[in-house]
Length: 241
Image (cartoon, rainbow, N blue to C red; front, side):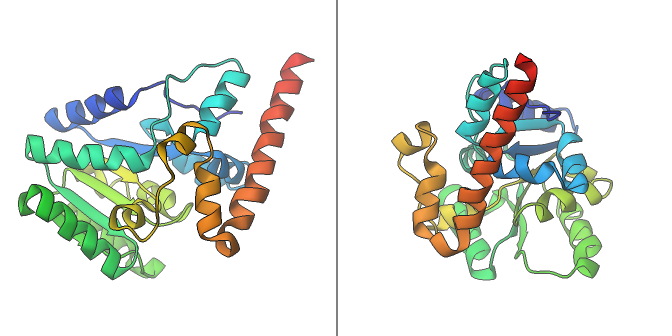
């Protein structure tokens, strides 16, 4: 479907990030799920923002299953909601610094408070909420670049976060690792509950999120997932002809 995905485990992904920081390199990371794949079919800017990344992980179990159906094999899903806490822990172990950008002010502040309490203030390079106008983007990117952060986690919706990281990558090259994390700040702070592990493994995490916010999520998940299934099956049928 013209979208590259890295066949990486969680541990392999973490090791690549660690190596990049140790060597002073920059890695631009992204995850894809069913909804993002659907958006990428018509949003050329989002498509370019995603495929230009250095690491593209399978965020949703649907991506793992779709890859298998289309003749490729991914070892496992590497969900952003799991990767971010692992990388924050790595920052504590290795003396790296993190910048948290996105969500409401009270939410991002609580994320910083939680990690400060767990790991100490040394890992915090800075934070900022995710409410801003387009005219403020350059200033925010410069603020992050000047913070001394080794890792940047951006918790704003797609395609806004992917486009922000792509459009300002020249300024953000000072940050070794940049990553969009969607609603992960809400999960960390308990605003949104994560699905039980068995539902995650069964590919039903989207349904758990849907029943928490049906009015806001029905179109994204019910319509978006149906479009994703049709896309995958269409490509499968074309390959069979």
